Length: 139
Image (cartoon, rainbow, N blue to C red; front, side):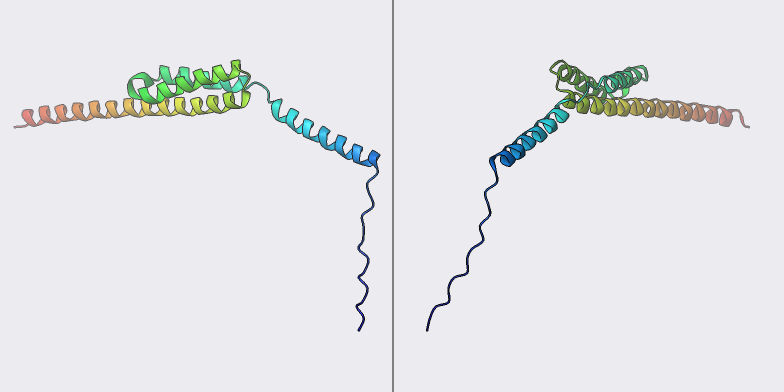
């Protein structure tokens, strides 16, 4: 019995050096382009302005009295966003500014709810006093 011959193994021809260089250059340029695209985020100045306005509005709505924790959180996040802007960490600045805006809006809504609750309590008390007066005057 004879052993059949082993089939020849296909070999891949070597890539010419010029093609390998072109591929390497292309891959390097693509990587650099992607890094540049990620790093070229513009400063979130518009979001910073919106967040600052939301904080001002929350203060004007009385959030200092009705939602002090949320207002403090919003101010802290806006301060941290400003520091991130100074460090040119625009992505972090954007996230912090957006979070500050949400916290300020929450504080403003809580202030409105607190004021509405107080007004409702005052109306209930006025109604109770009026009902008591009417009962006294009825023979």
